[in-house]
Length: 156
Image (cartoon, rainbow, N blue to C red; front, side, top):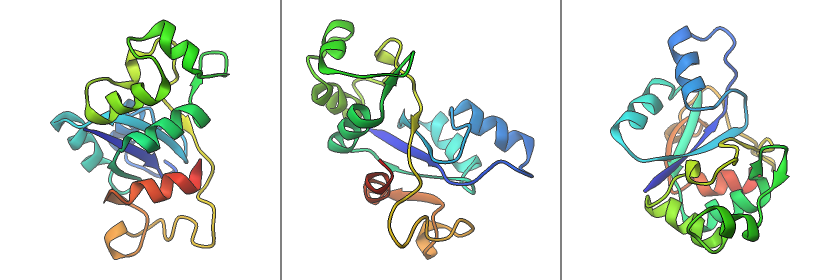
């Protein structure tokens, strides 16, 4: 399994250790997203930065859409099926996305792929829905589970 993590808040007046944790997650700016494997080390990092990020379970369709529409190579080039086929063991973006979602592969397996997805702010009347409250009580922060897909769809 994998998680999709999106940074929701700025790091102005943030404790240094939390800022460093978000840097380790490659979340350096608001509306940046990363796909990370589900393991105890990353879970601890997510818990530490929970007041500034939101995350949830990744599915293959959403990862495929993120890679094809927002994924970039070094030099700001888009990712194509041909590039995936020549540089990885997978024949298409769809197959690579399924491997990432199941935990068999990571974003690092594709050379020269930028690990950060630069997304738009959430579209629609709701926007983020409150940047100072957790998702459970109607805000935008913390764990979302499967509902992360609705947020990322509005941001792509």
